[in-house]
Image (tube, rainbow, N blue to C red; front, side, top):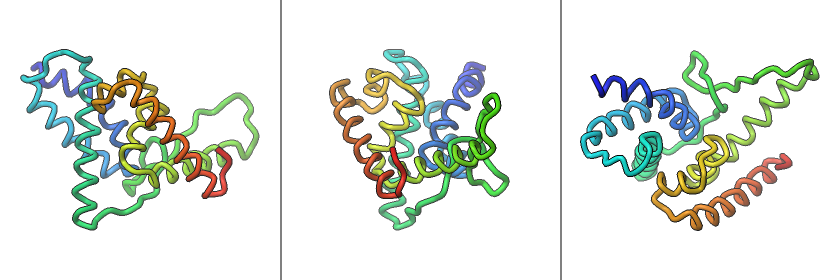
Length: 179
């Protein structure tokens, strides 16, 4: 019974992180399932030294990194087009925008293009840079929480985040977009 509650409380969190890391709804579903299964197996060993959500972030990021390394070794690594949230019928992501009061007619399209460009630039980064940026800028985790997830001191998180932002800025400039 506890396992079912645990899954219900963490499934959405894990899926959203997996979606942002992988860029594909199908890959995110696979990664989320893998991470949740790993967490269930390790649940008896959870010592409660950190919050359960932080523990789940760490398991998800580690499962994703393992998958990336495996795919790179097997030469299956590919770049995929992605959005920020949601999913279409074809398994790929799409961007969903929250409508503001009286936006300009092309604001939604512009925002969607901006989001897609940022996501494509994120995909150019290595997995460590992408993970730290997703955790800080999208998931809005503190330096300390990111440190727990990635097993790094807070000072290292800050310096790596600074470098990752510079790399993202360079990738955006290369794509012709102003950061």
